[in-house]
Amino acid sequence: MSQATNQSWGGRFSEPTDAFVARFTASVTFDQRLARQDIQGSIAHATMLARVGVLTDDERDAIINGLNEIQGEIERGEFNWSVPLEDVHMNIEARLTEKIGITGKKLHTGRSRNDQVATDIRLFMRDEIDVIEVELKRLREGMIELADREAETIMPGFTHLQTAQPVTFGHHILAWQEMLARDHERLLDCRKRVNVMPLGAAALAGTTYPIDRHVTAELLGFDRPSENSLDAVSDRDFAIEFTSFASILLMHLSRMSEELVLWTSAQFNFIDLPDRFCTGSSIMPQKKNPDVPELVRGKTGRVYGHLMSLLTLMKSQPLAYNKDNQEDKEPLFDAVDTVRDCLKAFADMVPAIEPKKVSMYEAARRGFSTATDLADYLVRKGVAFRDAHEIVGQSVAYGLKTEKDLSEMSLDELKQFSATIEQDVFEVLTLEGSVAARNHIGGTAPNQVRAAAQRAREALSALKAGA
Image 1 (tube, one colour):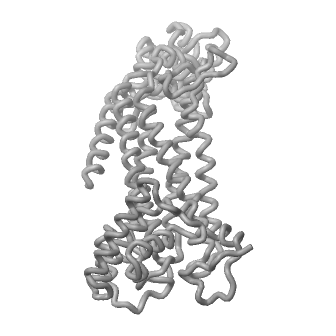
Image 2 (cartoon, one colour):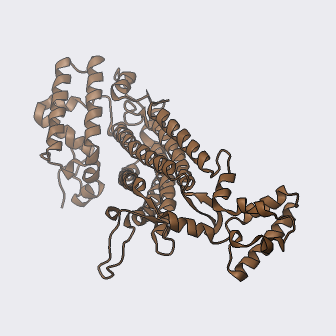
């Protein structure tokens, strides 16, 4: 079974395309998502063509009015997408010609679907990056405020998921914020390379028409036109770069999710998540499951897969455009949607986290979290660090045997391990004394946490102002 050959390229062919091949090679089922950007690019292209004299003003106006009407049809759900027309570009062009006649066929002068789709994707990516950045800023703002609010809330810090030293909850949240700050920089840096215009590269070699690519770039808000026509139509490194950003971001969100899942468990009991971010069990009525962080953790692998798909897609392609590139859109679209949704979920959820301060404090008292403080105390008294390490190790062994934390031991008990220990040792063995002693930039002392939160707030504000 076969069907008519696509009129945009069928003149060279002696038989129609097989119906299955037409469906197999068509992309309109998913690239119709680029319709708004395709129309935006076409309006700019028609405007430029009129400015250089390739179109008349009347032809330009007919094209622009027709495209705006088509945009309305698409937004109202009235547009009839056709698989035989293959893609979003030909569907829109065919409808334009249907509406305004032969003038619609002049729109494609001086361009190819190769530079057209590359332009559409870049416009789409730029739009989506701006939306994603808003959610990323919102999440960072929520983290900064939560950290400031909980600057004195003590919790155990971990290495190897074993109690290491006491920190503050605010300090921990600011660690998350630092990860996101770097992700934010990566996103904005990626946007710079996205915002370069391929339009005018045509199929691969440029065009003989007297186009002005700087005019089109300005109309579309691009920083500049691309420098090389072969590269412009064929590479998708900007999409790979975005998906790389997305993978790193989701890796960070997944680490945060893992901690949130642990912290909400009965075994940790560190935080409470509002009910609206959790679900229950169909059989166990007591359950409150942290589904949002679990899903974010799970979606991370999905985005990793999209990055590998795009890298593999591009790795063996010769210059210039190849049909392989049709496969860039679905992984890219899903990566965009996943990142945006995960950030929105976190931006809504994180500021609503309620720390269980008593549970955190009691957990920090277990596991000899102030052992390093005792070693530092001994060093300040003149004991060599390696000797101090041995003394504290013996103290911990005694604590394990007697089921006493270091801060719960009497002075006489501590002095059996070193005569250097005096009454002032208890100032460093308290959790409050331990966190307060880390009083330097980057430390966990409450005043340092508040100062760090303020610096982060100012940096984010400057970023929002375009500084």
